Length: 206
View 1 (cartoon, one colour):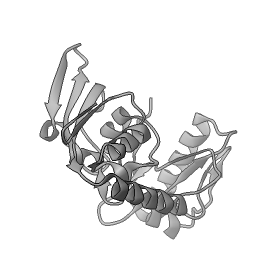
View 2 (cartoon, rainbow, N blue to C red):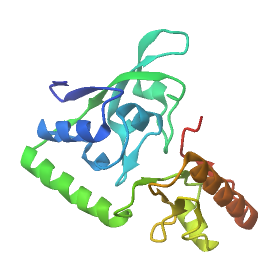
View 3 (tube, helix red, strand yellow):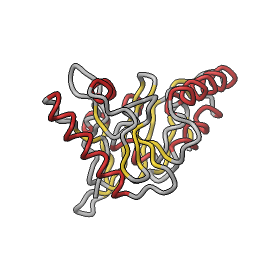
């Protein structure tokens, strides 16, 4: 729902739907996130980001169901958004309110379309599923570390690293969760062995 320059969405809403709804309402701030798969809740937990803008930067408050069964709202500061992180893990996210900026719908739509074209050019096309499994360590990027030690295109079953973007994991229709986890661990082991950097994952793994 939209009220003035604020948009509130359920935690289970698809992020892409919320982005397009905001743009249609003439509200700017979420359009850079177009194309990121998943829900609003998942995006908040991992502080999803693209084109230098993260969802935490426009989040006003989050409604959560805590492990003790209490429903409450927490503000942006308490959520502790940082690079690909927040302290919302372990909480059930019921909804979130975003503080956005009024803007021209036509200009916003054009900007969103441009970002979509850029994203499609950067990430692999024609594959089933993609993910960015690693958090960039201080002073480097996971992609650069992986490329420098020659792991481009490494695969495990139906999962592989994109040869174009070494930080991107690609899972085809035959891939299993076990394939993905094994590949992630192989990459972490090799990066640690050859560079001394212990890559941290950007995924919630149960």
